[in-house]
Length: 74
Image 1 (cartoon, rainbow, N blue to C red):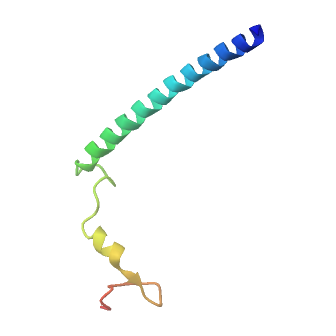
Image 2 (cartoon, rainbow, N blue to C red):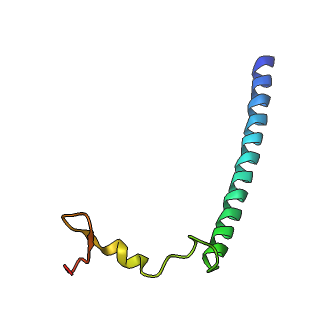
Image 3 (cartoon, rainbow, N blue to C red):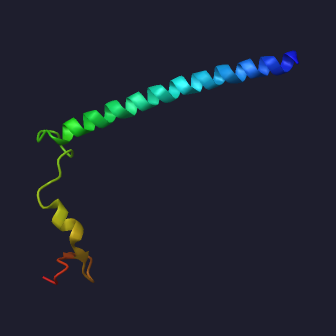
């Protein structure tokens, strides 16, 4: 039985360590998310704010020669 108790304690200890690591990862994710959201509101951060007209390009379909064409055929 002593072996089972020792393994149980080791498993509980490992579970505690993993829970602490998970909490640190969650905190890091939240900090990164807040940082990214702040950067998206700052025009001076390259790539954080979409370029004007970027949404238009996403709706364009490529033509036969690979060049984008408006979906209305223009």
